[in-house]
Amino acid sequence: MLKIGVLISGGGTNLQAIIDNCENGKIDGEVVCVISSSKLAYGLTRAKRHNIPAYAVRKKDFETPCEAEREMLSILEKHGAEIAVTAGFLSVLSPEFIRNFPGRVINIHPSLIPSFCGKGFYGLKVHEAALETGVKITGATVHFADEGCDTGPIILQKAVEVKPGDTAEVLQKRVMEEAEHVILPKAIQMIAKGEI
Ligand code: GAR
Image (cartoon, rainbow, N blue to C red; front, side, top):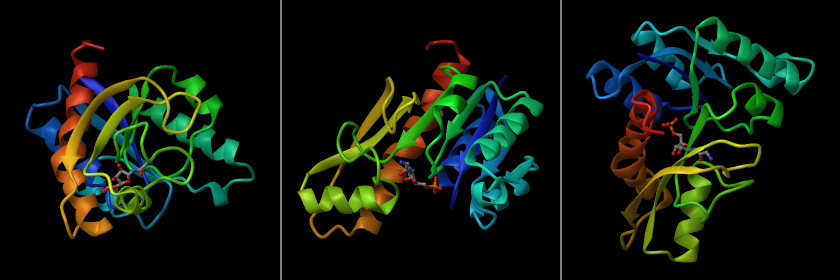
């Protein structure tokens, strides 16, 4: 059973997809801890409902961002997390964090990388940019995190249609349901099975 640590910042629908797929046997793994960058994240409630240890680690509570990351690493280690999944975690991890978890941090991004990614592209902003550009196809990407922002080897991508009249909110929901909640659990299962 792959021990999975999940890092979140908000609603946690991707976290929920991981938990559900662990519970229904589609992922040979378990979520051992959830760490949020905000105390108010609804994802923390989702974790507690499934009796998963849940923590809020806020950079502002520490003297340096580095100390906050050390706290996150010690939580992941305490629970024996073998991989860390950033699922809507809206803070960029430092190269030091990635070096401490080499090749074991994966990220979900709500576009087809290399479109609409990098600094400043997160959450709704990604979908606003897609609509502004007028693309007809968007999607989501799961990739290994490296020391850059939304860079690192791509594991899976899935395309989603942009429909006439879409708002950023409507598009975000379609990308989550049709792509993110499908490819993120699938990528984790590929790791659990040792396929990548
Ligand atoms: C998701 O769409 C995720 O792909 C995105 O934030 C949302 C979080 O939703 N992440 C990024 O934009 C990172 N660059 P969730 O909390 O419901 O999973």
